[in-house]
Image (cartoon, rainbow, N blue to C red; front, side):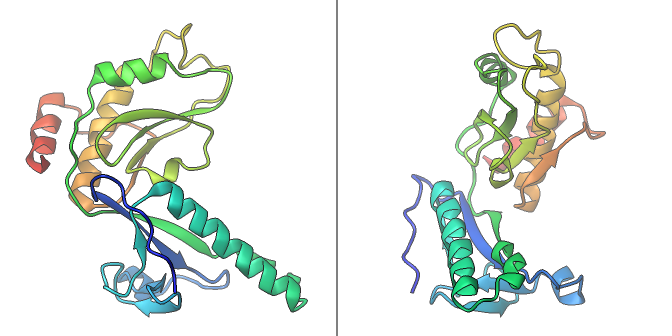
Length: 214
């Protein structure tokens, strides 16, 4: 049986583990949200929804990453032991789903985004994200941005979009698109990838809609 993952200070987000075979194709079941999830007893079962009480979840991003790595390593170990390495594509069949399960405690500001962009190291790839509590962060690399409620297109190293020498030319657009993505996340409970600005650019209207969730 899987161990219960430690939770964050406030359970406003959870992570569940989906199993998708490499040869699976689009189906009506997947459209309806029916999928194979890791369950609390450690087995993989087809559930109607990740909200099913059998569905195993953790509330800590680092623990979720660690569990996914262990699942993939275990699959690879089984394949090696049984001389089935031709099926190694099954190693990457587990994915982590990000689910909102509570309301945030903070609402980021443009000034806060400016600070994290200014403090970022332009010598590496960077990505602007909004975490589950509503704080803006810049994370290095591109590996785990998908585990945050809102993530932006990455800035490549050396392009001076961020850092102490940057003009922060994208700050205004990044702030507006962060508001748009944050509102979509709060409305749908699903993570958002923001690679362009949507039509609703009125800052006051966006803030008014967002504040309904606080």
